[in-house]
Image (tube, rainbow over all chains, first blue to last red; front, side):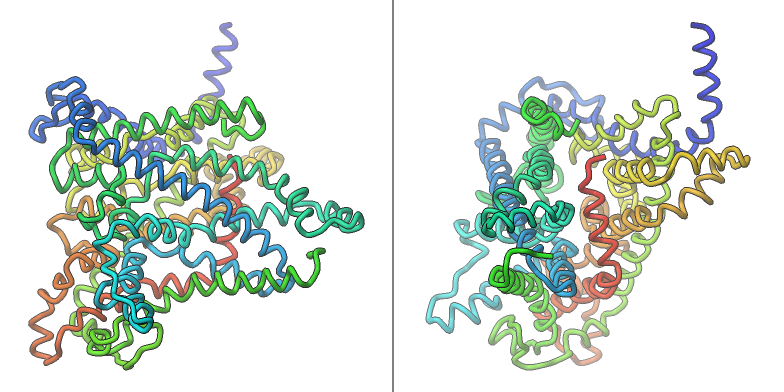
Length: 309
Length: 295
């Protein structure tokens, strides 16, 4: 026992330079990621700026009852999860189709060009995306009203005040911005598939469709599971830029654009309603975490290999 | 490469050309709108082909260049300082974690991984940075919160070190009497260019495009605004720029082309990315692929 302790001590001393290297990273991680966890208690407190997080008085479950009584909770949770489900299903389908198509392109140069171009939207910030969307949908100057609807003899649509269009608009924008990224992940996986499977399939007279369903898709399954698992873990999170910036924070659209993230932001910095916002943030953090654990456990049961941890 | 016949290949090309157009055209819409005269924009709206070509939006930007140049400087500065610090800190954490002999390795690795699963959310972070660290209205608020290091980057870099750098090389360096610092700098880093450039690229892009830190923390000191913050402010109030620039514009005798000028600033913010991206494209795609492999 003593010699073991001694050797551990010795090992630690030997690795001292490595521990020193880790100091900045660990310190930053502690401050940026671990210290804020203590702030989760705010969900159960009545926050006063002057008193700070620790000194503010406890308020039990008041923040939560208040949040659920107004109906806000239901709305923001519905929006956050609803959009994410649409994004996961559409995004995965779309990315797989694009990856398969990319693989069918014979000219290497063309393949490269497509990859370069479909990644472009990924590089643009949501602030700039919101400018593009405004150029398309602006009521008096927008391209769609002016160059498409008007020549067709249709009335201009006041896009930024009509909530019913926004689920489609936001879903399309999200798809536009992210499909290139996930397509490339799937495409890289397809490139890694042993060509001899396909050669054998062709010899056996398998059609293109058969090759896709019997070789490509089964080989993609692990990646599909991993990526879906990661997205499910983020199902209580939304891209603040997409839901706040792109609809230009328009009050008339809140019904379909308000997600947990925009709600928390407005509560903290616009409407000064820290209590309810903290309760919503708490739900996001904790339920999100439980969901990752849950889905990961489920995947472990079905396909042990593909579990994240 | 493909074994499934010409017909499907042609179909694939057609679909991909359409998709590529969908990705490029909206960006071109920005560009052409910024090059259209204000009167034409008022009359016909934004369009893919300028109905009346004009540089007045850019002329106007030139008259009010002070604000935009400052914002540009802030973006470049934050991106440079942020990216260099990020790559340094990430490497210094990832390398020790890649060493199998390090006591406590699993504990620290788990601590990094855990940050990807659970976090305190926006309100606790905001209150901590503003109340404990007083970061509000400082230049550092553009660099430090959230972007300086990310657990995901640490994990993919650690994976790269463990899988791509043979233990024998490290062992040989040790026998030759190289200390840990020496080994890292002169043996490991030269072998790790792909992962270093990947992390640098991801971090650089995150800093260049970030507008949240400025939105949260820059309240009074709008002189620290990056170009993204400026754009964000302008979409809410187009006069944010004209207020400051009104005098110079009046003396120069030009009207404020508010409809076109927004698009011109958006174009200016995009240009560097569009210029650099084709050169870095390969590394970027590689980065996405490396990043998708679980650590």
